[in-house]
Image 1 (cartoon, rainbow, N blue to C red):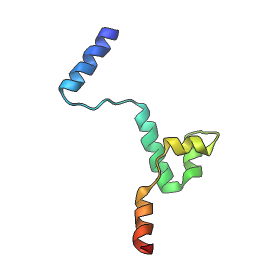
Image 2: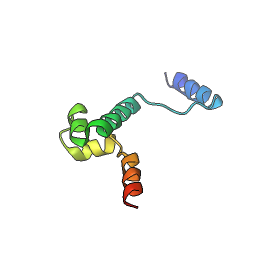
Image 3: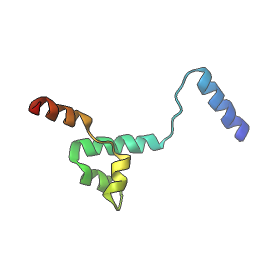
Length: 73
């Protein structure tokens, strides 16, 4: 099994395919939910007991910060 995994990684590097993990889907979904509905909604959706865990999983919406900076100056 380890040989097969090493071969797969080597082929990916040769084809310049970035390493990927299924958990990235959870992070992306958490970020999308947080962006659209807020931190509490993302926390519930991801089934986290604490919001600080959700803050790690669901990235902040930097476009919102940029929009505010443009408005305020």
